[in-house]
Image (cartoon, rainbow, N blue to C red; front, side):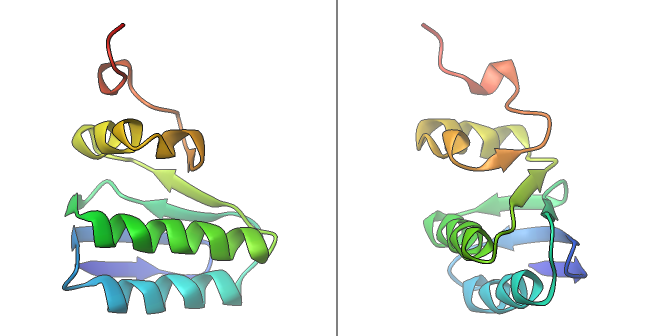
Amino acid sequence: MHIRGDHTELVVGGRLDVHSAADARTVLHSAVDDGHGDLVLDLTSLDSWDATGLGVIMGAHRRAGRADRRLVLRGVPPQLQRLLVATRLHRILVIEGGIEAEALPRV
């Protein structure tokens, strides 16, 4: 996993999982604490995340809310969009451009 950027936009790549969660949490919390306005997470280069990685994202979302900021997800890969829909987190998180139709369940 690698994260680069500043307190307004971070690019997250690789795997966000149990092995990288502590480092990712530290970087995200610092970015939230050191800035103001929206914090954009560009996930275009993110290969995968597990439940721990998703928990890091949710923790950053809550921390941003407490700091009167928004965490905005950009470039969420389709397979990760499906996970957000399955867990209903797409209703809580701000996702730039929304969720693609193929990620939504068929009715």
